[in-house]
Length: 473
Image (cartoon, rainbow, N blue to C red; front, side, top):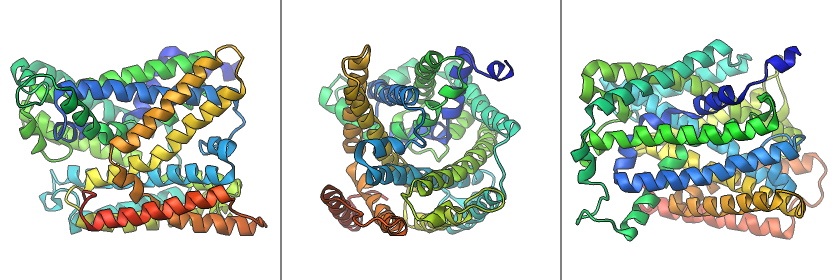
């Protein structure tokens, strides 16, 4: 009975889905959206993205309910394509998690620069040094077995939601309909153009997908619900609520400034928008709250990739070294390996004009692999259960999700997706080592060798695109 009392009802679980999914992305989304998207196209982009993410959430909910014994989101790809498929999915999830920390580092430094101007835009040498110190401090804290306490999560949630509420209220009061309507379609004539809108929607896809990174964790909370049906309803309601929050907070700036003025603002954009409305204290308030929020998210996301590689090692997808834990039950080698790679990427931010955009674009591109493989397994599972009640609808959900994420990879810019292939090469060597440790005679099938060939070609193309400037850094 005591265990049952801890279960969450529909409203509580819906609120948890919303609060756990809001990250740092929403604080800087205004300038990223305004750079290539008008208000009208932004509304269309949010609706399309929300529908696609809903397919992912419904797929995860269905899979968890039907195959609760599967451990780790990458295990769905293992069920579909075998161990190498599981490795591809897990490595993408791991890669996305620690690349997200690079984005956290840059936007935290940018927020700190409001109080310490010498930090610039968050990607100069001083910013890199401070971010590196924090990075290794996070590594030390996690290695000592520190877990996210309830009070810490509460503080982080408050620091995320209170500034958003304050900004929303201030922006609604100051909203000017004439400014909002002036560039509603973003065309020279001011009239609707389908071609222009499609182009604008495509240009906003990466930033829209970035703010949904982490939604898969919210969809995997079914064990905390009163019933499985409650978990499904909460996921849908939570996503709708999240979409409303994102839509409101990304559209309100269009009624405060022109698109050109919004694009000129530093990150986090929301801080400088609030400063424009209420004065300097608004920017200080947003920046302080965001620094605390990002620090908490950074800590959580330092633990996430380590847990992923630990599970992968247990399933023989990575060398046993990644599964070795210390006396605090933390896989130290895996943690240091991830932190060292993060350090290398932090140094590369010295050579990019838009460090935050570059980091979150890589993070989002990496997780596309995991998301699309979830939807593919949804198709496989539903097809295997064809003929049973409701499976036709589940099959449609999986197919729509697969098509959406395939389109999202193309629309958001194939360059960042190909760039992730460089890190996959490192992973393939580790996968081979794991196979040898476990006595696997034939590590790759013919089809898997073809996949590896495409990964190598993709990595080579990404290097060419970097050199020729076709990937914006």
